[in-house]
Structure formats: structure tokens, C-alpha cells
Length: 179
Image (tube, rainbow, N blue to C red; front, side):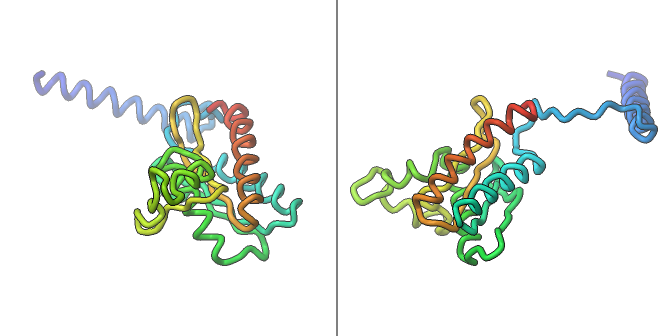
């Protein structure tokens, strides 16, 4: 490729970018609410998911903390209900981290991490971030894990129920937003 060909390519790309910028500034660009090519959970969906789970938790009398992490296990959103335990913040994040990083529900990990289980002691790895009781679920679209969800604030049974509820809500939200 010679200098003229490279210059032509650069000029074409710059013109395309300028046209797209002009369309956006003039309101001519079509903005889509679809997330079909995403690899991580969008903030909007994370917040909708958390809001629904915190609402359900409140109906149960649980002041919950909910956390959503992306596929790289970095926090996307964490919200605490009024009156939630301070410790629930780290536990919810740990459940979200665990479910995304190990690609499984934290309730399933409980059995594997029990004495005699194939993953006994795993909760002592990863800087203590692994949580081995219910309330964490991976957020899966097709065959892709786009994040993890964790909830803490109630008993293990309540947190497990809320995790299962979160999975149902996530499936509905994924359909609604075209994930």
C-alpha cells in the first residue's frame, strides 16, 4: 500500500466520523435501545434488576444489598436498602464476584465447598472474595456470561430465594432489551 492509498483511507474514515458526529448533533441519528452485541451487562439493566429485587426483598421484610458485576467481575452497580446491614455490602459484591468468576450459582458452590467436597476450602482463595452460600447468580445471555448478581441481607434461604427471583427478572429484562 502506498502513501496515497493510506491517505485516501484515512480521509474516508475521517469523513465518515464527521458525518456521524453531525448526524448526532442534529438529532438525525437513530438511537437504539437494543444491546445485541454487548459483552457486559449495561448499567440501565443492572439498575432495573436491582430495583426489582430490592422491592421484592422489602415485601419480605428484608433490607437487602444488591450488587451487579460485569463479565470481568468489576462492579457495575451496588445499591443498599435503607437499614441494610453494613456487612451485606461486601457479601453481596462477593456473591456477584463468585457467580461471575466461577460461572455458577453460589448456592451450587455450597455443596462443592463443603468438607469432603471437590472444592473444599475455595472460599479461602481469591483474597477471601469467594462466597459459598446462596444469593449469587451468573447473568447469562445465550452462552455468554455478561455479569454476576449478588444479594445479601436476609437469611441464607431468603437470599437464595432472592437470587432465584433475580434470575427470573434478568431473563425478562434481557428479552425486553433485546440482549
